Image (cartoon, rainbow, N blue to C red; front, side, top):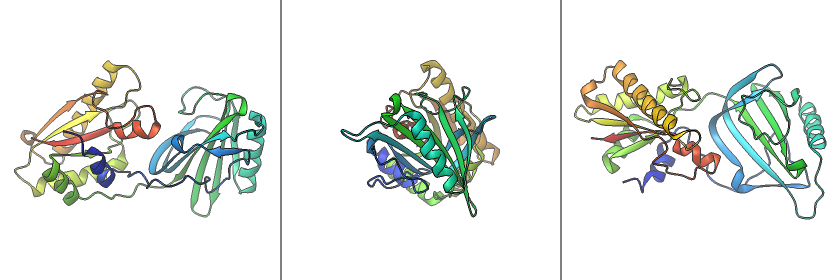
Length: 278
């Protein structure tokens, strides 16, 4: 039964999605006045990752994440992609930042390839902010992606995990892996340390580690990836002293979504590892 997944995910997922509120401009750069923010396609997240092309290679940055989808207002005149780039280039420089790249980058990023991109970096005090601008549809809309670089805050503790499992029989974890791989990212290790602490505090608890993906890609590859990621988490727990007899692993690919795979936010929720009580 997964009907109560959403409440568990909001309470315990790392990173937790920020509370939904009317979308405001990206705090470092305002949008063009002829455009409005598309609420359904815009995202604020406390912690995520995104790739930026710096003129030489794609750089993956982690921290607070923004996506702002801008659409042309009714009866307004669209700016050209060049005009959008020129406005943001000047704004980045005015904010004390640097434009790193403008043009068509090589494959490897996650942007929407409607046109070329502009990448910039703003440094304010101890804050480093990366920005990518991507015009689409001849300037009728454009996307802004940004990361304020920072480490993830660990919110979930062992007691929270145990309470959720005892109450509903499972808990969903937002464990991060390298893209299309089974290697666990370092920022997820504190969360798994809390899983170890929970298991050490509950000697009789046995768990199935279950992997899930979004629906991007080939089904067979998603199935294999989900199995590998579940096994990687189980192997990590065993390496920390948890008995293998208390654990098992299984993958379900994209077959059990808990959110809408048509949105970036939904796909992020579907990429998860669940701990299910045996």
